[in-house]
Length: 116
Image (cartoon, rainbow, N blue to C red):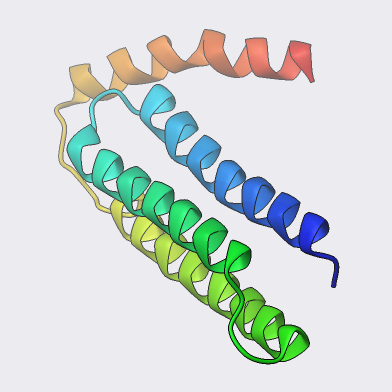
């Protein structure tokens, strides 16, 4: 694996995860965004840690980068599980609140479909 490609992979996978978090917050304004902010902070820390490790390899480079790739996917998977746990939390709303959220989100979905 090329170091340049690995760094781009770090940017892509962590960036996509952060985009998923931001999309969840935008589409669910009624959910607590503090937990999502904490997960985003963890993702940024992961990004910085992986970039630092990639710039300072230890030992055999091939084995080091293979291990770093494995670590990246394991930690991103952990972050995805945390995000999934927050997304799946069920909150009880009254019927009027549910209708209000559905009406609010409909134009967003239409906009996404039109732009896609």
